[in-house]
Length: 283
Image (tube, rainbow, N blue to C red; front, side):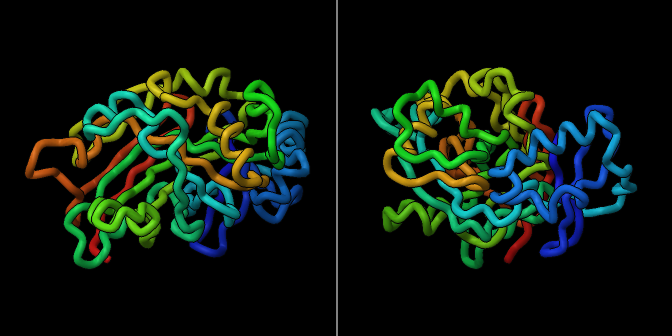
């Protein structure tokens, strides 16, 4: 199953999408898919209610798909976390996770427009495995216990403005522009993802495949990332972690680099987690 939020921006409601594609109301269990719901074992309760036939069917065919999680407390990102991505950009692979943040309010739905900032000539795409925290992680003692704190996984597009990111060395500037994190379509429970280190992920621009890799190429796996972050910050239910992007971004291409332009169509997917499609528009 997947947890989805449907409706216009700011008015999304929670639903469950079953494996056969049928959609069911989740409003009887929770007002939203947020940190409180996840912390209260909400995914297990939703799965049990679905299995017991207790969720009313919903006609959701014409509703906008929003971000599958509401109001993440923080969006934590890991940079240069794929070996071949580090190679294509000429960077030395890091010896510990490179950590930066995105403003939480840039998280939008998987089909919402990617807005190219005014004056930008270097807006880039990044397909990433998103990790949603389900249980508070604070000073975890071992890597082995880290995955027990993950609620689920999601497709994430960590859109980046490279000039803002690198000109001043302040990565957050190039990561926090409006609509810079399409997320979804759904939150897939961690129990339904047997191995987060064995997922194919792909991205196309205007039908041309740009990224095609696997989470096997990660330098630091999901468990290592969650453990590391718990030593430097408190991860709380509903927080989102973007775990890095593979090779194939515009930044790594020969000049002139094919950065996004108004009207470009971006499509991305991760095995078992669904697919996104956005259009780039001038802000």
